[in-house]
Length: 349
Image 1 (cartoon, rainbow, N blue to C red):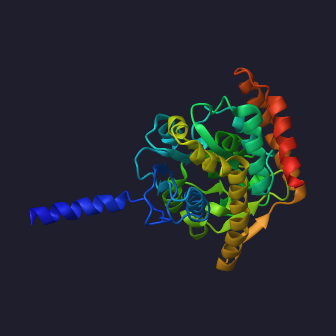
Image 2 (image 1 turned 135 degrees about the horizontal axis):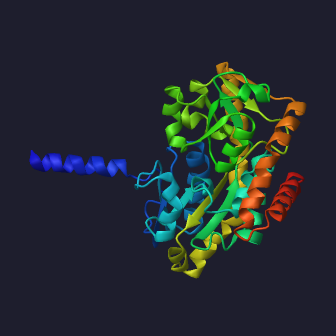
Image 3 (image 1 turned 120 degrees about the vertical axis):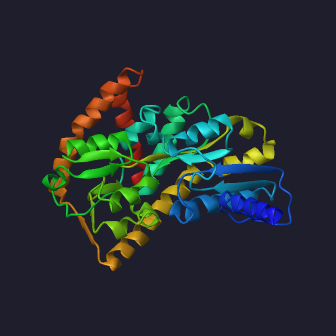
């Protein structure tokens, strides 16, 4: 009986940490196996519609010589803000996370998280961030081998009451994904509460929060459409906020690969991955918005005139950021100009 119980416990433990991705070619022996760690559940759109397809593409194009095991929901331990360090230190081989989870650590990329810099669509944002990294931020991410850096589409305000004007935000406790988004919410009269996305459902259910700011894509994974009934967007571009992401690989692991396998990863990195990511966010925005409307929730947008008021009210957030990064040798004003120019460039196609 003890032996049987030991086998049962061993099987249960293996099931908990089993990678949530199907193998491409069962009969092949991989030359390299990579551990890929992230924080969202395996039912999330990012996992099923971006990360899994990307890993399968890499595996297929390597002829089965690369095998990538994905571990979602922080299955390999640690917390969301530790993902970058896990990739840097070789705890995992690849990690997906948000620079904004560690405020101030990656100051340059924060420019895209400032209010009314990013576009409404994900593809322009993703491409703009990747190009901005290639031009300005290589030193900022030199501790890892960046596969791609990008940003999602427009973030909406999801609340337990209608929001039509700035006054409706007054006093609301809203989960904010980044420090810049939190500062923008404060400028608009709300209280931005920083919180990792996995904690959001419980906080909404217990009424610790009045709402959150997230893009459409993540809504189903954390059941926001079930916990909140009102969804408010800012019309057009630029939009209220976006968040940036990194897909990072351990530098030593990448350098240890044969040249032809490096080429496979390189061919699926940079703008190739950024475009895949941006398109996924754009596609899911349409799907999720339709689902939320069908459920009977209220989806609305503030007026163009009100959006102009919001933009004016949040200008001090940008000015404060420019002053802050100056102490770190960054010309924040120039960064803002470059970021907006890149967004405009990619919005034109």
